[in-house]
Length: 386
Image (cartoon, rainbow, N blue to C red; front, side):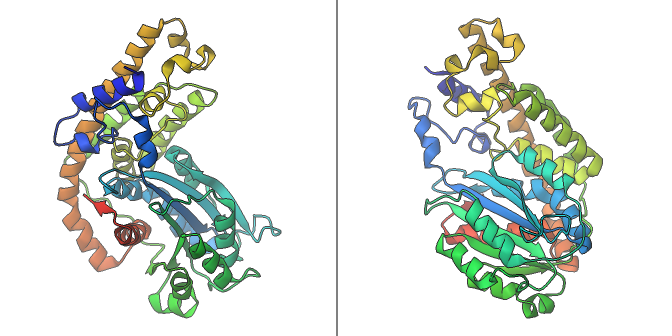
């Protein structure tokens, strides 16, 4: 039995029947060691394009605070009974501190499953100046990113800003048409009144690429609904970090980033912290590129990992001891994730009614706008939500 199969089996046994399907095992049958099943999972690819001109401080604040709640919503999605994989890319535009040759557009991060990196990048964004060219940044995202060719994969661009959509030398109609020709839906989020967003071309941009248009108040405060489960969710989420085994050249750096983003979330607000820790227990939070537990559960053979790429404490172990070490961490992680998922499900019921009241009274924020659009797009493609 390979270590990947052992980890899958250990994770399934550690999870309770009611919660096991929400733990990252993709419900692998232990008797069928078929790691290729992961390749059959659909992928959700999202490019977030944020206006970082002077007037957009509120938008950036919403984006960095609400990343985890967006991911948590996607964790409920299923395609053919399986949770999809998730990749997010990040662009900024409209910032006069960026290169004029590139139309004040910068690719902050290409499509990646490293959510800690995306979070770190969001917190590093600053605003400056203001020449916002929507066609330019959409064209950059369409042409630069490695979009999937699979028909079951959901590919979406979300662009948010508050200046006319039609500005700039790159034709916005051509950029949106190029996107939809590749199956990439462009969704537009205008920061301001709905009528103004329509009159300045934001609705037209969405219609041109089969996407959806909405509007938000970028300065709306994100309100945290406190729940009885919050304290234990955050405590267990931090404890999850001890189940990670960093390996490879970037292992230590990413492990440190994980703890750093926990600290950043805790400093930002209780709401951000709770959503982040809940996300870490979901199947959307994967770190196969630097964590041995995730890597082995996704087909990496521990015996083939170079000794110098292992953490120092594992280098002196025998192969059997290494396998047992990884299995111990996998089992403990499954226990923690299962408990967090139970608490998160209870919390969702507790806060949903209050959050709906807030949305009815104050309108959408960035996260609720993106979540609403993603749900509708996904349902078009036969995705289901738990």
